[in-house]
Length: 240
Image (cartoon, rainbow, N blue to C red; front, side, top):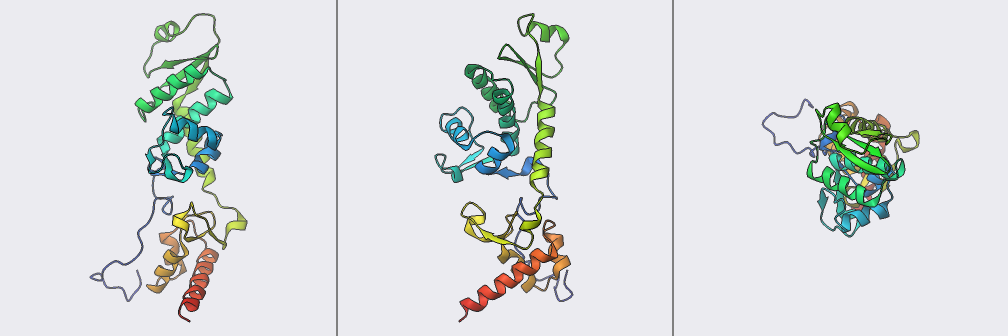
């Protein structure tokens, strides 16, 4: 806290967003765009849109469901869709079987720890947690080769993929971009959703680079300098 900041002074600092405080929260609290879900699951955006619009699998949040920017997916959605992607691309299960899995994942969203699917003959069999060997044997016809798809393993794979996606490339450091799908078209630091205006606000409040980095751990000092320089020029132009 800067020396000139009084404890009784109203906190005018911009609030932290989920995507900005990314190291401080679990993946389960994160939200994902259609583009992100497509990259992280391997499902094409057209298929995601079709599944959503036909109620095959719907996004957690959808203000304008027929537009890609109007759909936002939760972490649990991401796990469910990654599971469906594995069944589609690796096991090529029948569409009817896939629909049953999608309905089950939607109905039991998040309540699948310790559960798994068995895939045999392009058909899928749900194995609840705690199932005995006898239960598993009776779940599907004998003689079929079992290919297990464990929900715990899928969840860990998604967590690793999300963690990898958080990493920024060297080309993104200190670069400012603007895109209509990110932060309501605000200027942000590349590879993040952190607006340059938010960094400028902290700077105006007397925060130095290390203090700003504590608020936005993903930013480097180069990012912060670039954001401050950009906003200083923008404010100077606007005041003319």
